Amino acid sequence: DIVMTQTPLSSPVTLGQPASISCRSSQSLVHSDGNTYLSWLQQRPGQPPRLLIYKISNRFSGVPDRFSGSGAGTDFTLKISRVEAEDVGVYYCTQATQFPLTFGGGTKVEIK
Amino acid sequence: QVQLQESGPGLVKPSETLSLTCNVSGYSISSGYYWGWIRQPPGKGLEWIGSMYHSGSTYYNPSLKSRVTISVDTSKNQISLKLSSVTAADTAVYYCARAPKASSTSTTVTTIDYWGQGTRVTVSS
Image 1 (tube, each protein chain N blue to C red):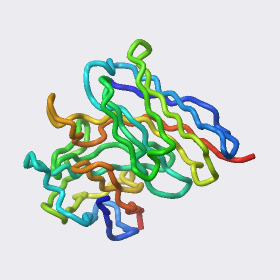
Image 2: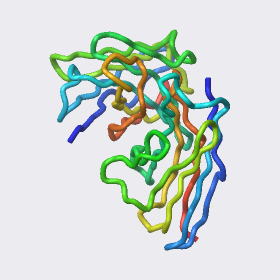
Image 3: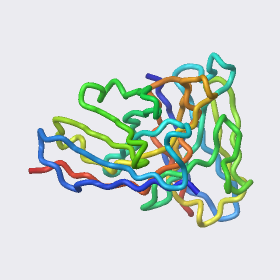
């Protein structure tokens, strides 16, 4: 199985300031079709996960442009340009390049 | 707008079989996509259980494969999950979810784009 490792575990952020979350995979996520199936999910308190970013950097429908994704191979980053109160929650990276699908352990974003 | 809604018993006894159903609205499951299940133990992270295409192609997490069955009922636009011989370790919120395919001929999924609200299942006597 591909192991997904996220850092930090927790990220206290001041409203309006940027936040950054890192995700590293135990092997390359480049699929034989040339795509990299790395996604980011947001889980607000008491809510199901919600897709934010797919294929490294593509924002899903309705996702604000303050969220951006980058990276390649085994190292990926989610950035929030200016954190808002509604961004509080746990963020997960996930890979679909290889079955079984696997998830990072999560990064909690909270307001200072 | 695609909507997924899980239902089933909230309490299951150890060694019994957990059975859940997910009703899908806003999209016909026979029109494409993989449909499956993901769970989240209390206070913990996410674990993919498995996904199934309406034509029958199914993938399970090897850690659960011997105990899991996912099925699709296209006439009811539902997906189902059965997990046998449950223990306390199977206590979790269970989500049904949709996964797009990479292409019409591919067996690869690209992400998980829609999630249900989840249903909490406790395994206890």
